[in-house]
Amino acid sequence: MKKNFKTAISIAAMLTMTISLFGCGEEPQANQFAQEDVPQLEGYSLLWNDEFNGNELNMDIWNYEPHEPGWTNNELQEYTTSTDNVFIRDGHVVIKALETTDENGNPYYTSGKITSQNKKDFMYGKVVISAKVPEGQGLWPALWMMPTDESYYGQWPKCGEIDIMEVLGDQTEIAYGTVHYGEPHAEQQGIYTLEEGTFADDFHEYSVEWEPGEMRWYIDGNLYHTANDWFTAYPDEDEKPYPAPFDQTFFVQMNLAVGGNWPGNPDETTDFENAEFEIDYVRVYQKDFYDTNVTKPEKLFREPLEDGNYIYNGDFSDNEDLLDEENWYFLLFEGGDGSAALNDGVLTISTVAEGTVDYSVQIVQPAIPILKGKTYRLTFDAWAAEERDMIVCVSAPTAGWIRYFEDTTFTVTTEPQTFTYEFTSLYKDDNNGRLEFNMGNNGSTAEIYIDNVRIELVE
Image 1 (cartoon, rainbow, N blue to C red):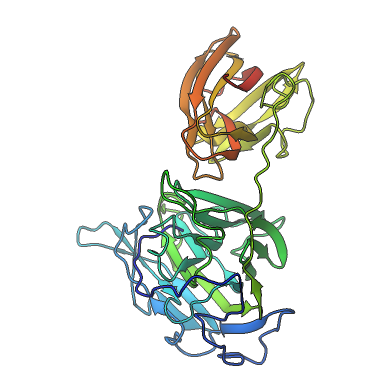
Image 2: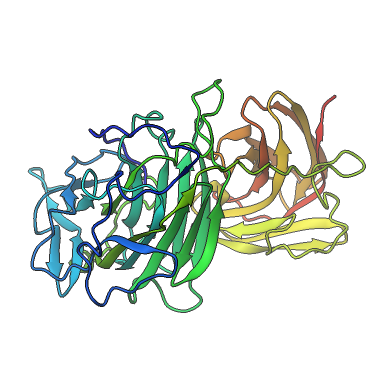
């Protein structure tokens, strides 16, 4: 959940090599705001919490953060201070999105965003939040954290962002946990999919453990994502000492967005009568001691094959599983439908529905090492059951989806052709470049055949 707000508090002096700290350098009051039924966690002390058992929002903990529509991400909602948008009900705080009309009769949306900034800021700890998300196209609930002083390392994304949970209202069986950082923008994202039901059916517990050299994301106690190799820097400058930017105080925020770049806008199916994001509790725990003498893990770069090819199984001689995340990986998004198979050493992509975006039908290979200043040659053979277009690129899924090789449209015919492209990386070394073949939303569902895929260094 990106943002653009400014803050007022400055960060204290840089940490010593090892520290013991609570909140903004203050000694914690024993079980401050605690309830008797708040569970204790082994190895942690309760730093602060809100069980939302009162009749109104506790302003000793929370702030309203109003914003006009379009403030960020092309979102449609106005964030207000109205109790129509944020209120306490039955021991939960409810953030409700409302649809009205403006003076011209066009749809107008209001919603709520609350933060603990300058009231309950802290550095390192475990945040545990129980919440139930709304369901509906264009709804985007989020639980996330931002630094108290966004300018300390520079504006977003250099300042860092920790997303505890995000869910899209039209895919409520999937939750995302993400960390944003760097310049250029980089991110690492974990995805958790329920085997049964959705996150809109009931309350689920979302948590993140934030330590000096590692973050871990959980849903209902299940670990699903770990990050430990972030960075921050201005373009063409040295990186700040690790673990920057996550060595400063952060605060918790919760909101329900409407529309925007990621979820898309609401439509006639969106039920605003039930557009409610409910939070049962927020609990922040902290260890007595954190060792800040941490070093950034060394990146591991995949070696090329003996013939210099960085693409594994580029000739499709290995009859691998195309639905796992090893080597080739077949994906469907946004209305895409189809299948991938290996037939006699040829990759065959069969499309049933082309979907609404170019990556609706997609075959990729991740973990390709891309080094700054190096030039690479990409070659492959491709043809189709009838003439049609497709797109190829080399992307950076953990570096803000920048393109090492730009999205390039090419036309395949019924006869095999060899396609050759060269590209030079101008970005930081990346051990997770990703080759993509995108076959969605281009006016054809004709079957595609691919063979002899290579990425090699140009000496």
